[in-house]
Image: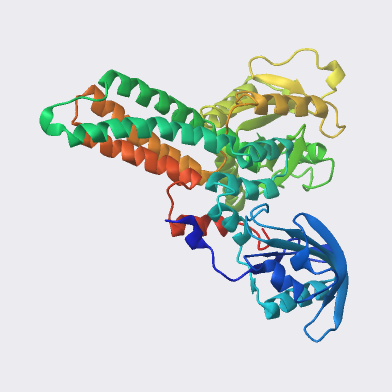
Length: 467
């Protein structure tokens, strides 16, 4: 599909700043005759005579000559603009009325209101961004932590796409040799060494596997590292959540079973976003509502990257063998519900941290805190950051954060397995060539080298109107 077929002739317009009242608002207009259209509502130096990347002060006027506002128009001439088209950005005062009237005036002058993501879609259509880089723009806007922002920057700059296109180039070379062999099949000619094909396919498979393996961590960085806080009723889970957030988010009560549903909040620590999940206390109960809360707690344990197992030091100090056995059984139950690569951190609560000289090795306690007195909280935060960073790719490594990319990479990996299996088993070259075409299709779907209208509609529908 030709990218330029994605663009209509009519210029588009939208407010690009967030909805609501602010000091200023910016309207963006893009299209072949965008400058001429804006000039119809502009009183000042003619924008049609303005050089690219120049800003001009003037009045916004309606078609009858009435002044709406004074503002600044910045002109970007094709192809040196975000969309690759002639573009004008108009800065006006942030009144909702002014914003709405400005868009109405632009529509009357010859524009149409942009669809979600249509400016970025035009940048893609004009070759200014590939599809993966375009999606990174949305991730950049949505980033809520330093780590998520850093990944989005790398992808928007094209590092990720360049890696994928390099892999495709290797596979296309292999495919072309196999296709050439098929053209001379009657002469029994081999243009491609099967060992070389196998080595190259294995190299690409390893790279694809590395990218798919980064998705779980990448998704956690983008959406927040899930941390479940679990333990017996009244172990201090809600108090700990409040201490970590430095606010009274969860209701705290001496009555057992107060928390009956999960409570989730986000927290940024050293540039990493965490999703803290306070759960219902784990115990046997006949209360149907509390049972549902406990089931939800176990579900969150199964989805968490880190589980904080809170143990009440006051109860432990008076513990008998039966209580210790119950705690060990609870630990086993928690570990059984966790993902294989998740981490359990034992936290002893309600203790004077200064007097906590010996950790309970049998229970796996690693940190002593007093959530109520806010002692040991900084040490716990440090442990969470260290755990989140453990296993993360090197700073220069590429990380997959997009579910669409992950699914395409999985499909590419399966097709590569078929290629490698076919080469090892002496399968006919035409079948191997077909699998190679499938690999290239899946990798190309990520960058937009191979795409469909349905994929593009899905991708750009996630964007805001003015982007």
